[in-house]
Length: 324
Image 1 (cartoon, rainbow, N blue to C red):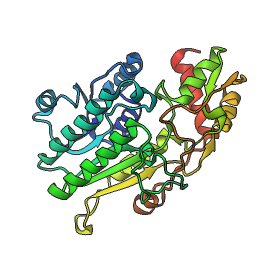
Image 2: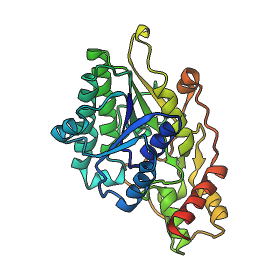
Image 3: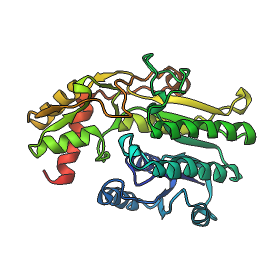
Image 4: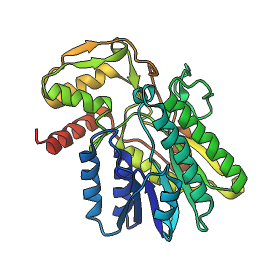
């Protein structure tokens, strides 16, 4: 049997696929390889995965029901890691229907696919810390209210959680939703702050820092995130426990000032940043901070990588990948 990983050409999907293959799993990776960001980077990730004999890649859009059904017909899948989505808060301001198609329709297609799998053990899917929206209580707990989204991206991710809960209730579908906090690391997304800052500082250009630098994020290194995803996958909700749908935060359990991240990045690059302070962007939030009590209790999740270690690792990858 195989593990289906959606969004396999993406940042987290690539790392999850690599880790699963390394422990001897068969992985079927799917992705539509869209141009939201550099397709060359996505293809480079896929090229590395293609070198592994137990990896099969299928290019398909999860929002295309007919194409998805045809592409997966005959595949022996018993676990699904659903990471494909339209990401990004700011992009949603100008491209709302991309989120409806990928995050709502796409999620429903995956739920229906899983509902009809005869041997499904577990569906693990990506939610987001963005669902906490205007929540002022810190750290963010999975028990906190999440009914005040401040971006369309957040609203679609919260809708995904509701849809999954419904399918779990109706069809006894074992599912775990993971609310990721700011994920960074090698092979990361070019639209994320760390990548943007690294590129600009390396090229001698200024960096734009929003809310005049008064921002804090629970920066989470990708290896820690992968450990949480695979740990969750290996521990599906128990049928005798009642609900078959659960939610976890995956974060570093520390909220770092954005300006400290920049200082760590400057040291790793050996260059000072020219900083341009800007007002808060629409749809953004001032601070994120993950309470990881539940996932630590249930699967033993312990993040191990502070930004002082993770940021230099990202910089080393960036320089190698770009030939800097």
